[in-house]
Image: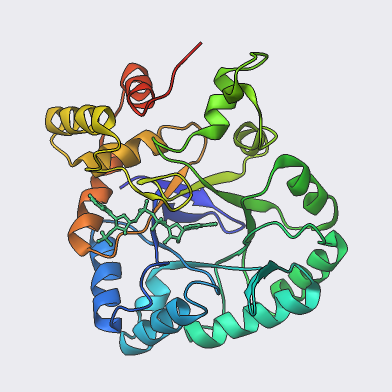
Amino acid sequence: MQYIEFGKNKDRVSKIIIGLMRTAEMDPAEIAELINTGLEEGINYLDTADCYTNGKAEDKLGQTFAANPGLREKVFLQSKCGIRNEEFTWFDFSKEHILEAVDASLMRLKTDHLDCLLLHRPDALMEPEEIAEAFDILYAAGKVKNFGVSNQNPIMMDMIRKYVKYPIMTNQVQLSAAFTPSLNAGFNVNMENDHAIMRDGGLFEYCRLHDIVIQAWSPYQYGYFQGVFLGSDKYPKLNQVLNRMAEEKGVSAAAIALAWVLKYPGRTQAVTGTTKPARIRDAAKATEVTLTKKEWYEIYLSAGNELP
Ligand SMILES: NC(=O)c1ccc[n+]([C@@H]2O[C@H](COP(=O)([O-])OP(=O)(O)OC[C@H]3O[C@@H](n4cnc5c(N)ncnc54)[C@H](OP(=O)(O)O)[C@@H]3O)[C@@H](O)[C@H]2O)c1
């Protein structure tokens, strides 16, 4: 496993993160097996969110910690707030909501602190001064050790950075071999085709410039939750290339897909959402694989992309 230094205390955290979005229907014993398998492979970072199955994923993780004394201390625990699912889904970065949401997460997770808190999806009505006040209170109370964002563009991060005194440690954004709008825009600067449209304001480059860790979510998915490209007949060329490289390097195609994400420069992490311990073991091999630049581009092209 490869590690990066993360946060104020320079915690040594794995480049692969176990995402727990899909775990609400699992037993605590199954979740413990998933996490312990990750720990055996050197994966020590967990990602969840208050909105995953309306608190149920956090609840199950809390039950898992309660049933396995010592487990909480072995992991770097990250959760997110700011997405509200009530009569409909909306976004809320108000001070009041951030404070309430973190207290509710800590209660469900049966822990006294989060190692990192992310603001989940941008709230157009956010008041950065309120975010700053909420973060001050959470930090002073020892409830949150580090802060970050998710799905934010550079201007949004600048607005938060102007008021919040803690660094934005990470931006969690979608990236996979079959989901590359940000990279496409970079390859097509000043061209007239649709790929040239920059929708994110250069967030990947911005994160590197400002030493913000990129956490890539859904590394095996195409589209917005449309499905997994691994083994999918929608991506025959991509699978052919991944399988060939997997055979050449003695790992799974999934590990090659993760290695592709992790090759993005900077302190990039990948958040895998498998619920299967065996697939966690496969995923862990990704940091032992070296993809050449040429191989990286071959995977990009085999997903149906073109270069100018
Ligand atoms: N910040 C955000 O807005 C945001 C949004 C979405 C997700 N996330 C985070 O990112 C994490 C990962 O997201 P994700 O679950 O969409 O990511 P993912 O790892 O791309 O996809 C996981 C899915 O792929 C399946 N899978 C894994 N390996 C496979 C294989 N070899 N063949 C076929 N299917 C395979 C898994 O099924 P099995 O369980 O059966 O292995 C699971 O259903 C989440 O848990 C969450 O922590 C963040």
